[in-house]
View (spheres, rainbow, N blue to C red):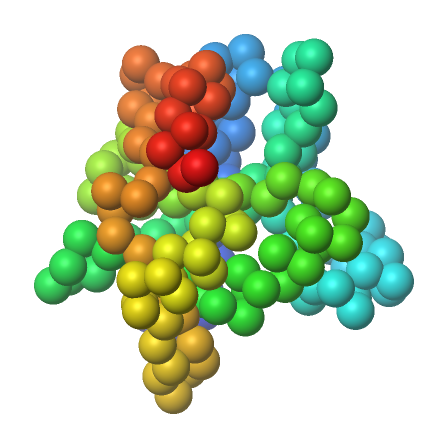
Length: 170
């Protein structure tokens, strides 16, 4: 039987593959960010220990960094639990280098057909504002309601859908 860590790695790889397929299907240009140790600058380690998975290129705008993650909503509530330490690192990266970093969550229960998008900076903002920041033995997390995410269907959504929904954050 595979260990929990092996299972998580398998699910992480699956969601990255599905995200890449979605980008390809919709003709969205991107660079996959290789995750091996040699491709990670030691100078970046003071800002972050984990890096996003994709650089999604947006014509005439620039790009956003995307961490595509396997994530299930909580059983009791329709919330995603998001690691605060990781989110703080992404926010530091975003603020220090003026980069936009987003989460895109999916899972097999939706058959990887719905992507739940949120800018990392909004995770902490919503968590603080709604008093949904918690600590547990495994670390801190924010509990963010699903209705705070931009949901994009695999069949009908594209980056235009994402950008038309951005005003809901501001």
